[in-house]
Image (cartoon, rainbow, N blue to C red; front, side, top):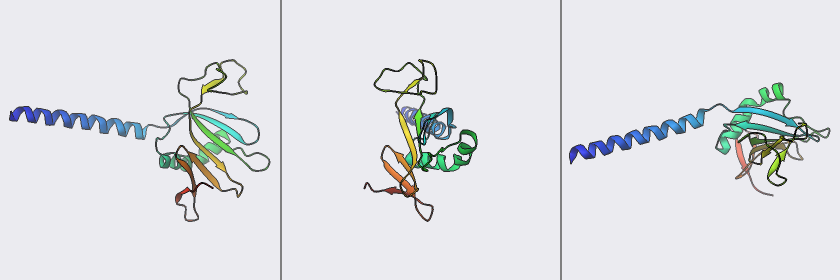
Length: 155
């Protein structure tokens, strides 16, 4: 009986280590930018793989990579009035033909295979005061005067 309980303990420990390792792998995978599509009026779409899962992870990734995004992809690319919106979409299964409903298509690609599934994961935009806002599934965030990331109340 005692040997059986040790065996069960070892199996549970092994399962826990595997799950922990998988979580670490997910958390530390590098973000891959597959493509960037600029539209008029300050709107840009960034197609990504391996984007951070948490709100804080997404915002932290933007803050750490905003200089690279500006230099390499000209993001954000504001409209003449200074407004911009950068939306990050999961690339998923890649480009495909549009279905007319749940697809996001890019007019800058002159091929019928120019659409992706709409799976938005993060948006960075500025508001009327030119403050940068981070839009995630669970709400809006901004950076306060002390450089803290704070959740913004709906207005």
